[in-house]
Image 1 (cartoon, rainbow, N blue to C red):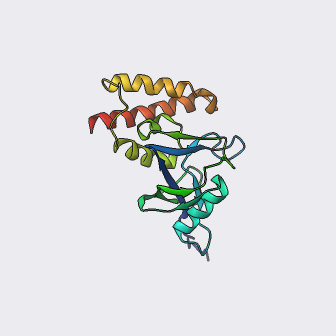
Image 2: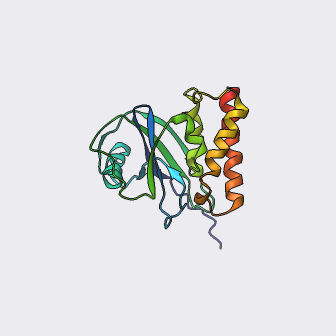
Image 3: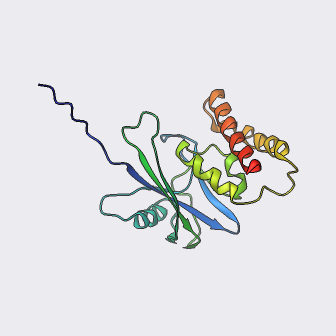
Length: 189
């Protein structure tokens, strides 16, 4: 007799920090040697057994950036399944506006303070794109952009200037398409 029971694994819980300072948000580029190499993300990581989400995020920020952060309100949460993953990832985004120490890059290819409206021009992890679009929409477009075409052109130049972050032309084109969809949504909304 065949046993057709399916094992359902609970989602992997991942926390991320939206660290804000002077109107800019800290974003991090994954190392070349890592899974999802050279893609951008918010600092954070996996919640370990026995940890609360805020405790896990505070630990991750100490390990990745050498800061002691005060974890604020949860900004968003949703489940996302990466291709070829054996289970979903539950993403939890928290606001961080207070921290001690100056962020030091201990694990990433690079870290950047960026204005929220420019975030869609970066090659973010697929799971973060939905949140990045919402975060960018909350603020007005960058000064000096007359219309959506102007914004698309300037945003495209920004991505194309970062082509060394892409492993193939198809990856670059896919990212450009995603970015332009988000830009259009910003101006239509």
